[in-house]
Image (cartoon, rainbow, N blue to C red; front, side, top):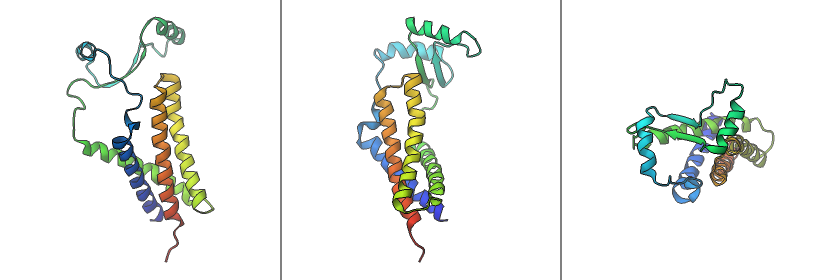
Length: 185
């Protein structure tokens, strides 16, 4: 029960922090850009892309043994990138409740894993806090730096994502370490 409560408190701390980060700081929009002449681009997209998904372009068959050389040639003369796309009407629900619930559940699972690991740490508050923070630093760079490197995500987007996750680890780690360090009456 001690680990569960530590995780719940850690998840609440993360949720509060990420809410502040998204609503009161520029972190949530760093690296995002508006498409120039947006309507001229969106009209053919709506006419040609019928399924939601993550699209990689120009497409190269990963089973083609020459895919890498073809990709290198294509990138020299063609636009290239990733597109997260939803056709009109798909994923258009403006009810934030389910998305916020999924985000909190994700944060709770992260905090539960962190609290479980931190509960096994011999030492006091600082040791547990640093272990949790270190786990979040590791996970923040694991995905975000790879996306920046391989898929050319903007550096400012990458930095903002890492900052949000690291601060999540700092606040969750502090709460988890505090709770786990409490003595039973």
